[in-house]
Structure formats: C-alpha cells, structure tokens
Image (tube, rainbow, N blue to C red; front, side, top):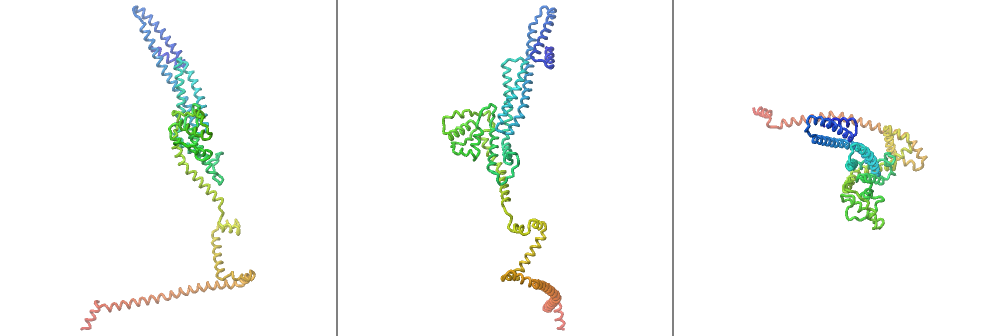
Amino acid sequence: LSKFKNDLEQLLRSGERFAASARHCAQSSSVEFEAGWRDAVVKHADWDGTNSRNKLQQSMEVHTACLRIAKLDELKATYKKKLLDALSGPVQSILETGERDSWASIRRLYRRETEHIILTFSDSLSEYELDQTTSVEMVLELREHARCTVVKKAREEAGNILIRMKGRFSTVLSHDKDLMPRTWIANEDIHAITREARLAALRLMSVMAAVRLDDKPDKIDRALMVSLLDGGPLCWKRSIEFTSDPLASTTWQEVLRLILCSLWFTRHGVRNKLEHFMFVQVSPQDTLITPVQCKSIWRQFKAETEYPVAQAILMQEAHRRSNNSLPPAWTILVLAILGFNESMFLLRNPVYILGLFLAFVLSYAVWLQYDIWAYFRHGTVSGLITISSSLLPTIMDIVTAIINMSHRKKHSLHRSRRALPYHAQSLSNQSHQHAEVHYHASPDTPSSVDSSSGSDS
C-alpha cells in the first residue's frame, strides 16, 4: 500500500493522467502482492491470502477516491480563480461606463469566457474518467460560479450607484458632446442640459437596477423615466391615473406591469394586448435595486445636484449682465471727448484726474460768482470780447482779495498774541486782590486775633 501511494504521487507529480496512473499503480501493487503471496504460501501452506488481497484492494480504492476528490477540488478552485480573473475586472469596467448596451457587452463577455474555461475544464476532467452525471454537475457548478461572480460584482457597483449617478450628472452638465467644458454663455439652455444630465443619470440607475444575463428584455428604464423624470416628451405620463405610487413596491414585475400596461392602454386605447407585456419578468434574485430604493436614491440625487444647477444659472446671469450692461454715461462722454488712449492715461495717473476736478470746481465757482452766462445774452462774440477784456482785472481782483485775506489773518494773529500777556497780568492781579480780601475778611485767622490784641493793649 505504501508503494502504491508513493508511485501514484510520483506519477501525478510528473504530469501523468490520474485514472491511468491509478490503474497502473494498482496493477503494479497487485502483481507485487501476488508474488509475495506465492512466497508466503510456500512457507505457510495452510495460509489463505484472500482477505489480505481484498483488504489491499479496498485500501487502494479508498486512497484513490480520496486523492481524486482532493485533486478535483484543486482543479475546481483553479478554474474558479480563472473565471474570477477573467470576469471581475472587465465586468466592473463595463458597469462603470453605464452605457445602455452594458449588459449586452457583459453577456458577450460572460458567454465567451465561461465557454472557453468550461471547455478547458471538461478536458481536464476527462483524465479522471468520471461518470457523465458527475461531470455535468461539476460543469454546472463552474457555470453557476461564473454567474455568481458577475452578480456579485454588479451588486458591488449597485451599492455605489448614487456616486456614479452624481458623477455622470456632473460630466454631462459641465461638458458638451465633445467633452469640452461649458462656458454657460447666454445661448445655453440650462433647463434642457439639466434634463439631459438627469436622464443620463437615470439611465445609469436603470442599468444597475437588475441583472440581465439571461437576455430577457425588460422596460425598467422606461418605467423609471415615466415615474421619476419630469417634463420633456414624457409629460404625457400625467394622464395616467395610478391607484397608488407605482414605485411603492419591492419587485419590478408589479411596477412594470402596472406602468407599461397603463401606458399601452392610454396611448392606444387597446386592452387586448396584455400579452405584449407578459415578457417583462425580473425575478427577485436578479434585482439589484428595488423600486422603493430607486425612488429614495433619486430623491437624494436631486437634492444633492441642485447646487451645481443653481451655480450654472448664476454664472449665466452674470455673463448675460456683463455682456448687456453699458458703461455709465460719464464714461462714454469722457471716451468721446478725450479718446481711449487719453482715458487710459488718466486712469493710470489719478493725480491728473484730481487736478482736472479742482480746475472744474474753480471754473464753476468763477462762472457762478461773476455770472458769466450774463455776458452771452447779447451774443457770443460780444460775450467773448467782454470776458477777455475783463479777464485780467478779474484775476487781479482775485489775487488782491487773497493777499488781503492773508494780511488780515496775520494782523489778527499778532493782536491776539499782544493781548495775551495783558490778559494774563490782569488775571493774576485779580486773583491777588481776591486773596487779600479773603485774608482780611476772615475773623478766625491768627493774624486778626493778634492785631485785635495789640489794639487793646
């Protein structure tokens, strides 16, 4: 038995087929046992080796069966790992794109990889010479593992559907069809773009709502658009009267049957076409996101995407105001009088603006003070002659008045300085006299007592 085990391990390690190696080792061990049994019969004539032969045969069969089970488990684990590597990454990438044909691509990938690996697995099983039932069961188990791998990856992606929807919404909202960033100019229709972005997010949720490996058509995307999306060509959905919320269910079968049959009856007025929608079957096992969860996710999605829409509207309004608003009238007047270069020069040198302002104020004061407008009552030429003839005397009068004001200010300051010592001296004399009066008028002072006592003596 030990030789059988060692020989079988060596043959399997060298790459030989399992069933052929087991038969070869069993035959070798049986031949060796028969040779040993004949030698034992010569020594012990009355010894019967039938029981020993049967026991050896059973031990070899048990060891072969145990080793076969272990090898088959290793083989299944190896091919399951191959299926996981072949399906997990590509399925995740396809689901991340969230295109309308995502499940069609996943089905093609699933069938291609599964058939290829199962074909290789069947070839590997042939060396164990299993019966047909066992082989079919193992192939079905491997096929089910491939399906479970796809479903597991789809459930993982469905758990992140809100993040995926917000990412898709932001991409469509902030980029055009050429993937160029939007500038939100005045001719952009924000409401239409917002609806398009929400429609893209809703289609992504419809893709992730159920597993579609069996190539059975469904109308989940249409049901979600009718129930959740507002406005657009689907506004006719308001004519449909539901007895309850169509998404208040945990199964898609009831939701789809209610919505689609109502749409068919409303649009066509035909009630004998119920079999048209009987193909809509989404089993609970294939459901990734229930209708109630879709409604909750959509409500949260709309609440979290209101801010970028409001920001886009504000940017468009600011852009429209910046394009439509005209500069102030005084700016237009300055540009018309001075020109663009001179205006820019004044803006770069504010001191000149201050000088011009002071000159304007002074000119306006002179205009009002001397009633310049009165000189032009008898004509422009006579007014200009009168102003030019009286300009020099007027300037001299202004200069003389300024000089006189300066002299008067100096004289008043000099008088105030001369009056200050006299005023201070008078204040000191008054305070001294007041102190003496207070001193002589007080009867309780020692000086008054002394003076009175001197007079008595």
